[in-house]
Length: 365
Image (tube, rainbow, N blue to C red; front, side, top):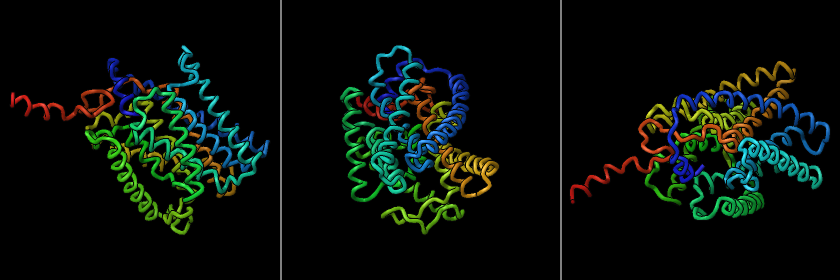
């Protein structure tokens, strides 16, 4: 969500953090329930209809489904923006997102016979990069004055056209920054550190930070032996994830923004910035690593072959992305404005230094 949207929400009376954080806990549990149900259903569907490799079809449906759901949210829930009941509207958009994603990959792989192994992750990763670059990191500054539906339609042209162009030239934009950007956006880490910096300079600084932190994450993964330095990712000489790291990455993307948004970043929001965001980055990474190990062990009970167990665990892990994003963006869970420790206005840090700037002017008068 852009900072402008957060400021608009701040016109409401801030609610008690403890109450809103607790009310989001059942929805956090819902991420795991939803991921398990959709994993089982899509496994049955794709192994039956046989329109493409089941693991990639399942992962692709959930990740492009999450992208479509995000698009609806950014467009102000158009075309169902006039539906009075918010829960009915959210459920309808959730189902539409799944159907559209399912149809896209079925046509792409089943009807048009494109190679999912070659194209699935490049399409997903690159499309999500353009969403992040324009609407989250970019804060929609290039179309800020336009109505939500119109600016999202124009952004969609950039997303689709940009993805096609990248796939035709440099193959794809690797997605390993995605876990980091989620934490730094939902906790307000970028908003705090870059307060007062205007777009597009703000985006340049943000991506520089993300590249640095991603390099650190890959270096640490190499040190722990969970990153394959010999793997090839098109033109990118950065190696590639092992099967175990793939499970972690799926959870890192799924139990990050969605989970923190649902509980309003508690308890990290009780810690002043920038330490609150920094601790959140470490904590999210830690709990996803632990859950990845647990998931691999659990799936090992159902699949005797280790490689199959790791693959199935990874497919399940990616399903958490869809549910976390939908609960936060479509259902609006955790969206009530609240104050971070040291914050003056919910949703923004731009006024943090205002008194200090105002004092010289007052002295002159």
